[in-house]
Length: 309
Image (tube, rainbow, N blue to C red; front, side, top):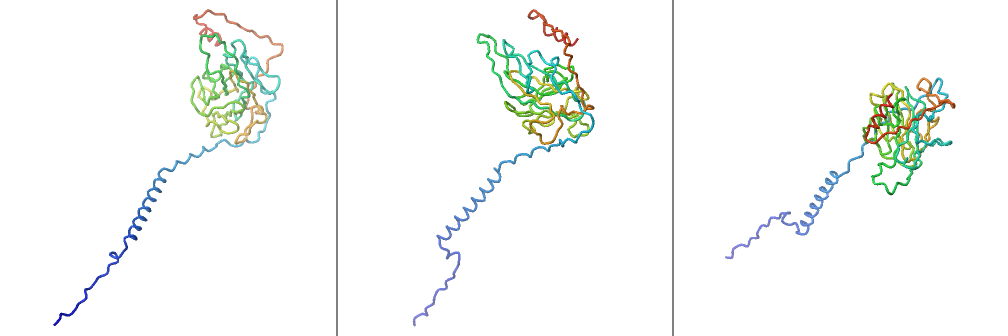
């Protein structure tokens, strides 16, 4: 008898039935997804750091002043200027003499009104850079820099060359803060048509008490710089020193460029906050000394002793 016919049992597995093309497509999708995740993580790691927020401005709007103000306008009296300073008859202009080698000398001038308390500002605008001709036959290298401008404060008895002694402090056009010949970078450079404002804060109730700040075209250019101990408690007068540039100065009563806060100018100072040096009499007689010295015989040492006396 023939043996009974039996049918084989076939077990179905979904994994075994998956088409090869579909499996390959799934692997590609997973690879793409993994690549995208890696790229996203890389982008997160390479994100540029955010710029730090600007420091909080602690200077507040000036309060309305009450009481008598100074009556004499702030000016540069001739005895408080170097001999190479020329003052314009109009427009509050200062410029140096530049002929016959005078272009190598620094000119300087100190204002007639000093600050002993409160917070006050004055402005200086650089309006021209001069380029006088040099001697083509000169064998020595010309003094550098060819142009300079310093704005700051000094005591009544200090040198007119602000920043050179412990009795004065200033900012220069190269962005430096200078005291007693020591420089530290605190701001950016400024050039022609820039209006810089120097704010002296001697208000004991202010968080920025006993500091000096520089503003460029109404924007803070430096953080408040602490006054050196040698200047605290002293009356400070506005002072400028410059070489081969023409400047316009403004003592008020209003600012040329507004600051982020309202601030009184030197021209509107209260009498109790200021010391005014009166203008010399028109018929006053002055003495001019022309030292004549031999080279390498201690000329500058002798002149320093003469000036101290």
